[in-house]
Image (cartoon, rainbow over all chains, first blue to last red; front, side, top):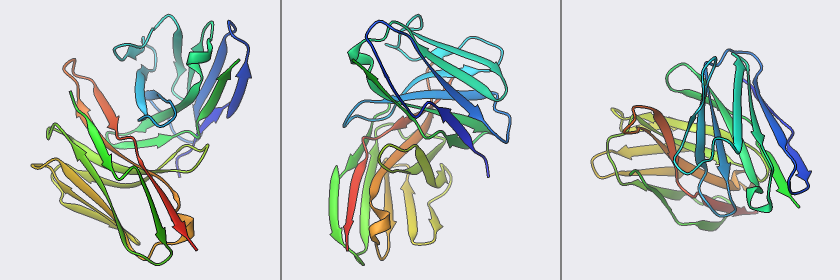
Length: 114
Length: 115
C-alpha cells in the first residue's frame, strides 16, 4: 500500500533556530502534498497546500515566510520552520494525494521549541 | 466557513459495547467525508471515506453514515475492543472560495475501551 514517510518524528530545538521536516511518498508520486498542524486539544488545521514545481498555497493566518515549503520533486516536500519560537511547538502532519480522493498521511512530527 | 464538530469529546466504554461517534458540519456543500483514527504520537489512518452521493460505508466492525442535507455523520463501532482505543477524527472535503480543495477536521473523539 501507499506509504508516506515523515522525518523526523520528534525534534527539540532552541528558540531562534530553524527546523526542517521532510515528507516523502515512498511508492507513489504525489503532485500535491498537504501540511497540517495540530495544537493540543485542537483540530488538525491545514497550513498549506504544496504542489510540485510551483509555490505553495498558504491558508489564511499562516506566515509563508516563517513556514517555508518546498516541493522539489514528485516524492518529496519539505516544511522549514524558520526562527522557531515556543509557540510553534506543535504536531505537524503531512499528507500526499494519490488521485482525486485518496490521501495518505505521514506519521507526524512533534516539534518542541525550548 | 465550514466548521466540523464532534461529540462527545471523550468516551469510555467497557469492552464489547457497541458505540456511536457523532460528527456535524455547517456547510453541506462537501465532496466527501472521511473518518480517521489517530493513535497517540502517530499519524492518521483513514478508516472510511463516504462520497457526497453515498449514504453509508462499511468496513469490518465499522459503519459510517452520511446525511449531507442535515450536515451529520455517525461512526458506529460494533463489539468494541481495547485495540479500538484511539482518537477518531472526522473530516470533510470542501472547496474554498479561492477554488482550492481542503480538508476541514473536527477536534476528535477520544475513545477508551476498557478490558
